[in-house]
Length: 213
Image (cartoon, rainbow, N blue to C red):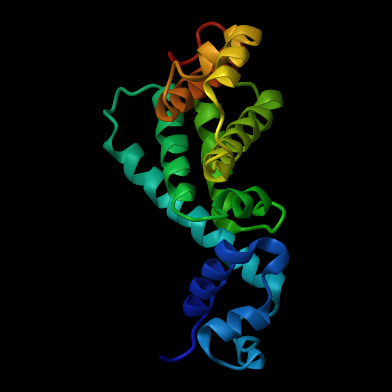
């Protein structure tokens, strides 16, 4: 197959999923594509440029998914529903990519158009809701950071060492509230409830008479 930027991004994401940021190199990407490393530079300038393209692809997929979710909302949907539509699709989009949250977390500093589009739309939603300008960036950044952190934890989970029954009993006795809360909600419910709490915090900054929730 003819070498292209899209194929290089595909190979870069597959390599990143296996070896992470530190292990990613243009040489490894070239080996995956069975080409000489020098041939990559006709399409992608260097590793940083490749990371930017990878982050941009994930962010653009999330943006497109968010656009579809927003379009499906009823016309009377309030700003909270519009926020939920954006962050739920963002979570689903980056979950599909091992290492996705790490790439997305770095994407604003890479000036990824896709990531900046996600931020811009969140800011517009918060502006239309009546969140004051001094708080908008903080709220939007907190929401995006929460999504990437939540997915990072989800992707980092792996089976731990076996724990015997006595250890479990001891832990329940020592930390009764923590162990009780840990099993109360599944991940999906935890996520949506946490987003709604963040929206409730944002609501406190909105002056009376602004758009309804």
